[in-house]
Image: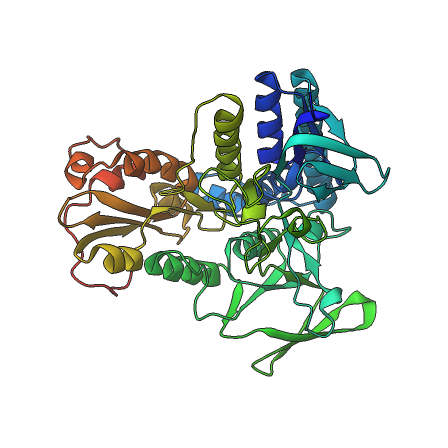
Length: 460
C-alpha cells in the first residue's frame, strides 16, 4: 500500500468514531486520533451529561407536583456532588465503550493532537511522529466561545466547566439566548439557583417559530428565571469570596457567584494545518465541504460540527455513514440536511422540525397555520400552571405538513415521530385521518381542525 493507512480520522467524537468503525469493518486500515478523551462533545461535555443534569433538575418540580396526587415529600433535599459525580462516571463509562468498540473493529486509537502536514500526511504534536493516509477525515468538532473583547471575560465559565463545578452556586448569570443557554438556565433554576439570563436579542431561541419563542420565554419567567432581553454583558469584575460584579449594556449591575458564557460554539480548525494542505475554510473558520463532505483538497473530507452545517450529533453520525458508503462501499451517498428535527431540553422542552411559520410564508407564500395550547392532564391535579403549545404549518396548495413545533413535556420524543411524517411528505388530510390515542398530549397533533386566522395571535 502506498500509504500507512487507508483512512486517518482526526477527532474521536460521535461522527469520527462511527466513520472509523464502519470503514474498518469494510476492510480498511484505519487510525483515529483524539487529543482529549474518546467520546467527543456529545458524550463528554454536551448532550449526554446535559440531559442527565436536566433529569436531575426536574425532580424539584416533580416533588411539588406529587402533593396534588397525595404524596408527602417534604423531606426531599439535593446534593450536587452526588449528581455531578454520577454524571461524570456515566460519561467515562460511555467513553470506555467507544474505545472498546473501536478496538473491536480493528481501529488503531492514538491519544495525541494531529496536525495536517500535507494532503496525505499527519504529524502528532506530542511524539512528533508523522504518518501517511490515503484519506484524511476531519471530525474535530467545535469548542465553546468566549467574547475576547469584554473586560473580565476570563472570570466566567462555559458549559464545559459547568458539569464539574466544585459546588452549586447560589446565583448565576448566563449570557446567551440559544438552546445551550436555555437548557443550563433551567438546570440551575431547577436545582434552586437564582438564575438570570442576559440576551442581546428581543426574544430568546432565535431561529425557532415565533409562537414557540414567546411561549417558552413566558413560561421560564413564570418559574422564576429572570430574562433580560436587549442587553449584553459589558464587563465582569471580581468581588470578595469569589463573587462577580456583572455590568450590562443597559447600565445595570448584578452581583453573582458565577457567569456562564453560552454564546455559541466555534469549529476546531485553528492551528490544524488545513489551509496549508489546500483546504478552504468558511468565514467562520469551518471546513467548507460539498454534499458528499469533500473539502477543496481531494484527499480530505470533513463531517460534524467542524463543518458548521447542522451542529447536531445525529447529523454528524449520518454524515459519517454517508462518507463510508461513498468512499469504502462504492455507493455514493449524500446525507439530506433538509427537515432535520431538533430538540431543546428546557422547561418547557421544545421539539421542532421543518419550516417555522415565518420561513413557510417566505418560501411558500400561501400557508395554513394550526395551533393549540392546553394544560396537560397531569398538571391539573398538581396545580402546575405549565401549558403545552403545538403548532402545524401546512402548505396551502399541496396540503403537505411542512412544519411541526411543540413546547411542552415529552416534546423531544414527540418530534421524532412527527419528523418521520414530515420527511415522508404526509398531508394534513392524512394526519387528520389518523385516529387519536386518548388520553395523551400527542392526540392533539391529529385533532387540530381549524386554522388560526392571522399571524400574530397570542398563544391561548
